[in-house]
Amino acid sequence: MSAGDLAIDVQQLNKHFGDKHVVKDLSLSVRRGEIYGFLGPNGSGKTTSIRMLCGLLTPDSGSGTCLGHDVIRDTAAIKREVGYMTQRFSLWEDLNLRENLDFIARMYGMRERRRAVDEALENLGLAARQKQLAGALSGGWKQRLALAACMLHKPRLLLLDEPTAGVDPKARRDFWQAIHELAADGISVLVSTHYMDEAERCHRLAYIAYGNLLASGTAASIIEQQKLSTWSVSGADLAALAQQLQGMPGVAQITPFGNTLHVTGRDEQALAASVARLAENSAQRWERIQPGLEDVFIALMEGTAQS
Image (cartoon, rainbow, N blue to C red; front, side, top):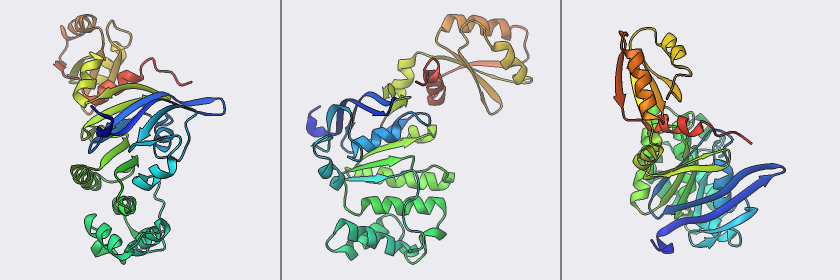
């Protein structure tokens, strides 16, 4: 793949805040028109990484490009071509939707502001609400307005930092529909999320924990890379069973999933032997299943210490 096919191409980025090493040797590539998911626990370095990519923070070391611009020397050029949506709603709640977008267009010094605002309102389904105060919007509509603000200057790359946190499931689904439509138009998207169903909507993923990139690829390839063995067990007394499973050979993690437990480990034979011993005289139902992304990401956290 040539450099021209990549919206983001960075190598060995590092960032410290005092003695804290927040991002450690981050290397990442995002293709043009791709939705790239960025996952990890709170405090893992996702937001710091995103801010380095869009020119808001300067890396301590490392190199690379964003939209063909050097991430260290060409930050002003990057900002002109990137839309960045923060975790918190940061528009003016005492202005209506049109006034918010018009104010932002003025800050960009955009020509034909009215047409740009009209297009943003129409494209994100906000035209019928344009006279409504932003502060009166629900969480889902606020996020849609924030996305419209990001799109005003026609960016080629969107950096979305947990855009659907606290948003109801329908609003999340509608938001992701809009993201896929933008990607289909050739816009690249890097999005951080905590939701596994959203991760599965991305073309490729990266998982970062405490500044370290632990895995990257498609959802299917990441699951395959981890070589996990997972069993699902249902029936009575699952809490007691979970206690019994603790420390058994091959058992690395025990995770409740509704009315079942997922029992996962990397040593397939040892785990199968432990399951066989417990299932032999048990009324509970055991079933070998394919691990999901959540199983994988819990497993990735095992042995990863915060420093």
